[in-house]
Every structure is written in structure tokens, then in C-alpha cells.
Picture 1 (cartoon, one colour):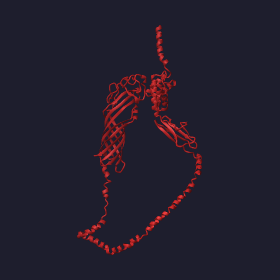
Picture 2: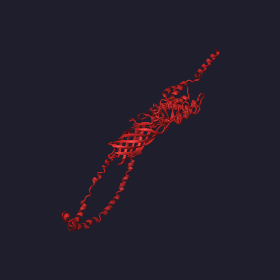
Picture 3: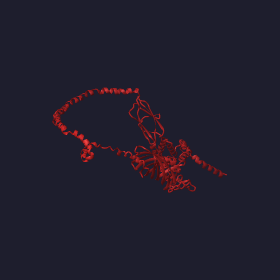
Picture 4: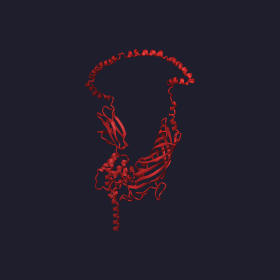
Length: 554
């Protein structure tokens, strides 16, 4: 009987030993840490705050700061990071606490760069200046102060003799804002400013200076003697050059010319003589006519030669078939990845196209074949609704061909249609004819192999590829064979979305996919009759589109 009773006591002692050794707040801490790992910060924050209120542990404080940072409360998160980073290992701290202290130092530096700052700089010195930010008086406004991004800040400034200034501003992440403070003086308070102004003018005595400016009037008096210079040319003018001209030769020359010339009577007969012998005696008529024709023949204007030039643009409108080629690229911002999960990065996919277009009135119908290279470097990604342990590193070397048709409306910007604004849309299909999409399980890059307590969530862009199940050692929560990604290890290529491996979800690699662009905006420049350059941008299924090309008329 004693043996069963002793055994029962031993079992009860073992069962209650863990509860007896558990510190206050450990239960809330474990629940909060698990919720934070799953991305449920709204649930994790009250649990971790309760745990920290009962006792402090770096392993629970750092996840609390992570959630504060995700919620936009960067100041709270920074304070916790710096507090944990300044701690030293104490008795009772586990391996997780030691790792959390190390991570806090890195995260504090990264977060401080994200926190925006505000500096208030007065444009001029104001007597009795008082600056309040969110109701708190600031002793030195020129010192940068940190604030949470996206939250409105109220700035109030007042000074003696000036109107109160109130302004609300909102800062963005990493912004360094400098607010120029300019106060308006009150109408009644302008008098004290007039006193020093009234005292200064009597001391300067400006009226005496214009009295001294009278001597400059003597200078123009001194310039009067130079008036003698015009007298000299006057003395030169009277020489008898002018009388010599009319007296010497002009009158005698004019008199003999009039009687001797008798050209007017000769001119009269020449006109009828020129008309009559024009038929009978062409030889005689050729002499006087040749002399008379030069003044009669006027240079004929040639507007008809100039008329076809402005009509040349009309020939441009008749170029109906064009062959073109150019560059085409797609830009995928990180926000596109964030629509489906966490992680991702900005990516640019280059390519090119060849097109054939035909003119339909003011519209162009364009058929094109394009190539695009969808190469993505190693990028961490976590689908929505998955825990942190499901992070993967994805990469791609896919290549695609696209065929599409676009309808573009041309809006001329000038009379000659050298410039035209283009608006349109397109529809087509794409085919991934080469390359693979690779997916590999990942684990925190700051973890220490062999110490499973160090495998805690961190910066996903520092994550590393798993080499196999529980490889490195201690990474079994990240590198395992317990889910759909059981075989996602180096070399794994995602199957196409037309196949579904047995016991696994459908593949995600696109093989044939629709392609749509709407709207498409562009500008066309036609420097020559048969050559045109096109610049266009648009929104497509594969991301924002940009293209630059050239066309040749056929």
C-alpha cells in the first residue's frame, strides 16, 4: 500500500513541479510570442504588455517592440530596443534572452534611421519666443525631436508683439523636416519697433550729404567749355565746298544736256516704231526693245512654287503601314508583393518588341511580338496567414514571349503632326517558354547552429536557405517536412499551374497567361516623313509598362 501511495505522490510532484517553477507572466509571454510570430500583433501586444508588467525578459520585450514597429509606434519600439540592448546577461536568463539582447542592438540602429525628426528654426530672432509641440513647451526648438510617422503634430509659436502661429504637420518615415518659423507682428505692437528706427535717422544726418552733392553740379558747369568743340566743326563747315558744287559745273551741265539730248522727242517715235517694225523689221526692233525690256521685265513672284511645301504634311497622313521595333520593360514595385504576403523587393524585367501597325483614320491598329526576361534575385517571401516559420526564399530565371494587339488613338499636337499624343489599350497572351521558379525553405540568418533557442524571427532579408530537414541543427521549426513545402530545398523548381503533384497543392509557375494593358499613354515624334519615335507608359498585368521605340513607314 505504501508503494502505490509513494508513486502517486511522486507523480503529483512531477506534474506540479513545472507550475511551481514557472515565473509570473510566462504563460502570457509564450502566448504573445507565438501570436507575434504568426503576424497577429493586435493579439500579441496586450499579452506581451501583461507579461512585461509582471516581469521583464528580453525574449518577450523584443517581440513586443517588433509589434509596436509594425503598428507604426516607432518611438515605443525604439525605447524598448535600446533598453534591452543596454542590458547584460543576468542569472535566470535563457539562451533566447541572450539572442534577444544581440538582436535588439541591430534592430535599434535600423529603427532609429526610420524615425522622422522635426526642427523648428525661427527666420529671425523673436523676443520671448515660446514654441509648443503637442502642448509641451520646447526649450530649444533647433534641437531635432523624434516623432512617430503618420501622426499629426501640432506646433504653436508665440512671441511678444507678434501674433500666435498654429500649424499641424505630419511626418513620413525617414523624413528630416525643418520648419521655418515666421511670425506676423501685431498692428498695435509696431510702436516699440518705431522707437529705435526714429532714433537712428537724426544721428546719421542724411540731409547734409545732399548739400555736399552740390559740387557735382559744378561738374556739368565744367563741361560747358567742351561746347567749344562744336564751334570747331562749325568753323570747318563754312568752307566754300558747298558753293563750289552748285556754281562750278552743275548749271552748265544741265543746260547743254537739255537742248542737246532732245531725248523726249526721240522716245515718242521709238514707242510706235518699236511696235510697227516688230513685225516687219525684227532686227531693228531688237536693239531698242532689248534696252527697254530690262526695266519693264519685273521679277515674277513665285508663290506657286511655295504652295506645295505647306501641302507636304498632307503626304504624311497617307503613310498607313509602319514597321517598328523598340525596348519594352516592366517594373514591379515591392507593394505588389505585399498584396499577397510579406517580403519581396522592387524588380525590373527588361525586354523588347517588334510591331506592325496600320492606320485607321485617327487610330492605329498595332500587332506586336515581344520578349521579356522575368529574372528575380533571391527574395524572402511569406504568404498571408502563414506563421514566420513558413518563410521561403524565391528566385526566378523565367523568360517569356508575348503576342498582343493594341488600338491607339492619335491626337495631333501641331499642324504638321510632328508631335502627337497617343492613348490606347491592348490585349494579348504570354508564354513562359524557358526558365524555372525556385522556392526554398529559409531560417533566421542570425541563428546559431545547435542552439534551437536562437532560431527566433528576425529580419527576413537576412534569412538563409535551409540545406535540408533540420539542417542546420536546431532549425527543425523552419527546416522540416511537416507541410506542403516538405521538399522545398535547394534545387526545387515549382511546377506549372496546369499540373498538381500527388498530395500537393497546384503549381504556381505560369506557363500561358493573359496580358492586358490599360490605359496606355504615349508621345509620338515624327521628324521625317518615313520615321517616327514613340515613348509610351501604361499599366499592365505584369506591372507598370515603359517602352521606347522607332517606326519606319513601308
